[in-house]
Amino acid sequence: MFRIKEYFKNYESLAATVRKFRTKYDRNSDLTLSIVKRAIEKFRQTGSIGDVEHIGRPKTSRSNVNIETVRENVGESQGTLIWGRGQELQISRNSLQRIFIEDLCLHAHKVQLTQELKL
Image 1 (cartoon, rainbow, N blue to C red):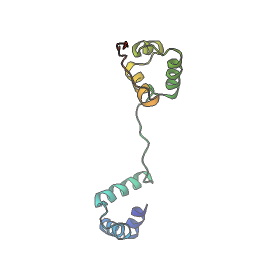
Image 2 (cartoon, helix red, strand yellow):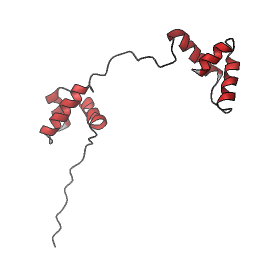
Image 3 (cartoon, helix red, strand yellow):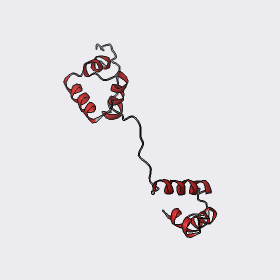
Image 4 (tube, helix red, strand yellow):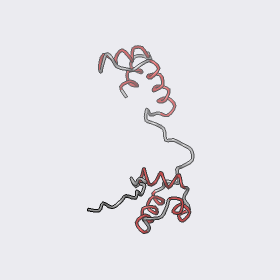
């Protein structure tokens, strides 16, 4: 917000804004003319310097409903493979793997056969 105020205080001078910022905060600041210019353009377009909400297709495969459904299903049938569980729940295999790893913190493991030691 300091950048925007200083820009208008200094009669819309980018260089003066950068100088004031560096004297107030840090001489070795990474603030450049282009950063101030982008912030001013964003402020003029939206009236804010905050990030704009992203628009596009919503992520439906990892919805809270699907995550809860998978969590309940795992509790009921732990031995089911991912492809079988995906068919049962009608969720793609990739989405199911993402839910397991990113949301439920469950990682695949490989069953290993070991020999029994006889004494």
